[in-house]
Length: 523
Image (tube, rainbow, N blue to C red; front, side, top):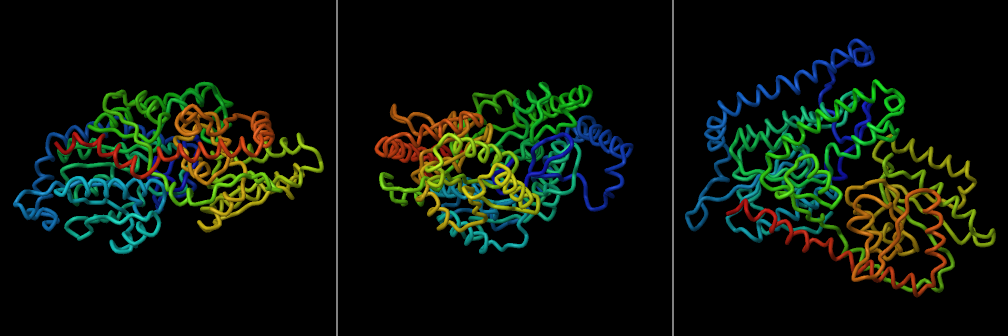
């Protein structure tokens, strides 16, 4: 639901999510584990979401908007002081509960704010954040250090932080059932907390909390926009449940049962319907890729309001890596960049590399190494790495695989400089910042033949190849062989063209696209 800055949990319903907000510390594990207790919780949540919630929202729309707007005018008076020319400021609120996380979603936030401040002198910005442990100065310093972004105006009246005390409503917790539903209820409550603290003129959700959009449009009378990194529910998820295919977001216990699969499919369809209603409340919808555009248009059904603006990528630092012909390179590394999460499908990388080694002569095996670069967020990730190391031993390739965990940015650039092939195996990744970084870093990219990498990134540029695509163990191993069978000059030509192509994903391109898409909000 939001940029790579949040922890992903999975549950009995198999949903991918960043938040599990319904259960609090008061819920006893015995209640959750007891079948009758679980069904009672499920029934209560479904009734609250699909029956009571619409009634409450309708009542609020009729009764509270004027009261909320009057109340807001009495809050944060410094934001509403007139400009030097006597005109009233235009206040833009950004809903980003994890603004201090330092991920790709946060780069979108800060680049968007900088673009608006540069374009509109009248604009003052409010950020709704749950980072209560960080001061405004600390947040701004981190944004500058991580993204090299300095805002034109940072005084308290030009940039204000509204701290949300109930971010725990959208944080991960032991939550085994109805993850999507719980996540949405929690975001509504957190959105209400934000709305009651201050109502802006324009509201922009930059983390994917679609259920906050109707709150700010109908309760507060704001103009509403959003930047969607990943749809909360997609048509792919519906198709996997309908076909009873087991995956990281469709547990085998569900896929093996006709009854449970039908129940989950009904739940998904109901949720998708409500999700679409919430999304249609946005006057401007910005998505980060062609893949996301297709799914959002399918569920929200407002293609005329939906714009593709690629996220800003830190290509400049990677472009500083010297691009050299690998004629004299004695070892060819295959490097993968990404957190050790289930959907990244590292087992596919290891199995593919093992099969590739089977295709080369024994004397050449030592000339190839798989380097897995990534971060471990928690104990589950560390356990996943241990299982991957065991897989390498079982395949007898542990001497040819290196794990580089939580390395520095300087070491990351060194890994890319030493690599020949950049490897990516996630199915239907919405965009693929890691793919862009590998291409900018000078590797020959081998990515999954789906999602953003297929539709937006690893595609011909100016009529010339920028990389390769594969889908399974056989195709990945064959493509590795094909890449290394190319002459050094042929590989150099592909890397050079790929580097040139990544300028499409620069901060400058993002700012131009974002300003164009949101222009109607400032008329």
